Image 1: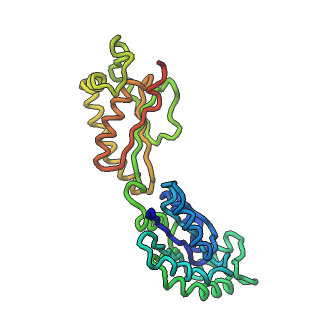
Image 2: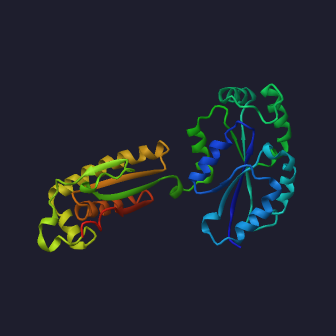
Image 3: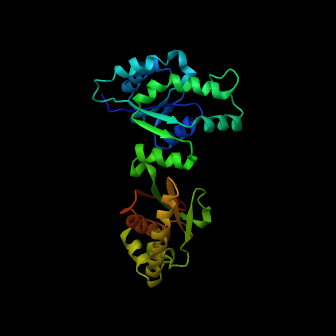
Length: 287
């Protein structure tokens, strides 16, 4: 039996379950909205029989839209009480009544239990969810929270460093266009080009002799020193701002020599502080 992380997202309607679901999706969870609680054991059985490693983290939204099934949540959770592999955790999202009323007015939606005034449905829902709230291992009051603050809270409780922020280095050739997903782009076409040395032309920046050639110049060393000072300042700011990944693109003319060597070098330096990947978009082009 494979280990399966299960988070049950529940709580007051209008407290942020939709936003929370998107955050869990960004964290790599397989999310299902409005799953009837009595289907939870059968659903877990299906997941266990699956060979996919992508289904080992589940976030399941359960609320009073499935209220005729809600009482079965407790019996469903009891079924896993002795399991060593599956221990569902409950995240309960809440907010003050006045805030929920305001949110319903802003979205012009009706509360699922309301027969007229939203406050009546909110009070009834709060009463019905009282027992579930008591079982929750995680509780978040979103009354004064922005979506960003809710994201930070969920990430701090359910995310890992590699899931919450990473750096992606990419080399490219300007002749093939800019990477459309780049956050930062640096042009290194001012550096000496190995392309014009006959025996180096068909090699790439992944080859040791090409890398040594690109890195040996004084202008290369000055550039890397200044660039790393800049990145050491900027990258933590992007992380603090809540960005999940930062794409840093290094470009030369063809994307085979200078940009490749420098992307590898910079990536190795950044990898000591952040999960970092390095890719070379155009290294195979022009052959």
